[in-house]
Image 1 (cartoon, helix red, strand yellow):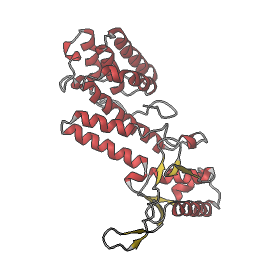
Image 2 (cartoon, one colour):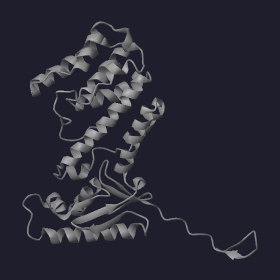
Image 3 (cartoon, helix red, strand yellow):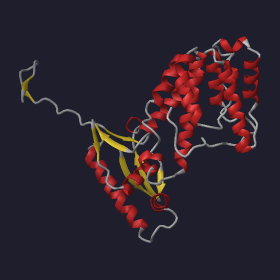
Length: 305
C-alpha cells in the first residue's frame, strides 16, 4: 500500500518491518530462535558443534577441539572433513535466518569463530548482568544489584545444554558454567538477606542448597535465613548435616566463617537478626574458604536456582 507524505504530498511506500532477530540460547536446551519461531538445527552432531562454539562465543575454537567434542578420543580419519560439513550447514542456517546482522560463523585459523552480540546469546547476557550486579553492589546499590542478579538467573531455562547432556555430552565447560551460576545465586541471596528478605528467599535457597554440596556459602545463607525465620533448630541441623557430609566424603572441616556463624546461632547473637552490612560479614563467607580445594557442585547435572 502506498501513502502520501504530509510534507509534500508525494506518494511513499511504508518501510518494511525489521526482521526478527536471531537469538542463540544454551542456558537450558540448545535452541536458535527468530522472533517466536524455534529454528531447526538438524541432527545431534550439528547441535553439539553449535553448543561447543557457543561456549566459546567470540573466541576462535580450534578444529581439533570440535573434533574431540563431536567424536571423542577415537575420532575417525574423516572427522576433519565431517567438521567442515557440519560448519557449512550451521553457517548456511545462520545466514538464512537473519540477513546480514545476525550471528556469524566464520573460518579463523586454526578453526572457527562464532561472532555474536551480547543480546543475541543468553550466556553473554548472563555474564554481562552478573558483572553489572557486582559493580552495583560495590557502589552500595544493593536493591539494584539484587534485581540485576535475579534477571541474570531468570535467563536459565534449566541445566545448560541439557539436551546434549542427555545424549552423553560431558564437557568440563558445563561444570564451570554451573559454578558461575551458583556464584551469582549466592551473591543474589546474600543481597536479599542483607535487605531483610529472608522469608522471600528461603524456599528457593532450600532447594539449591540441598543439591549443591560442598559450597560453604550456601549453607551459611540457609542457616541465617532459617534463624531469622525463627527456625533455630533447623539452622543447627543444616550445619550438622553439612559438616558430617564434608568429613565423610572429603575428610575436611568447615571453614572459619561457617564455624563462627554456627557459634553465633548457638549463642543467640542478636547481630544475626539485623540485616546489615555488618551482619553480612558472617553470612557472606568466601565461596571457597582458604585451605579448601576448588570443589565441584557435587552432582552430575546443574541445579536449578
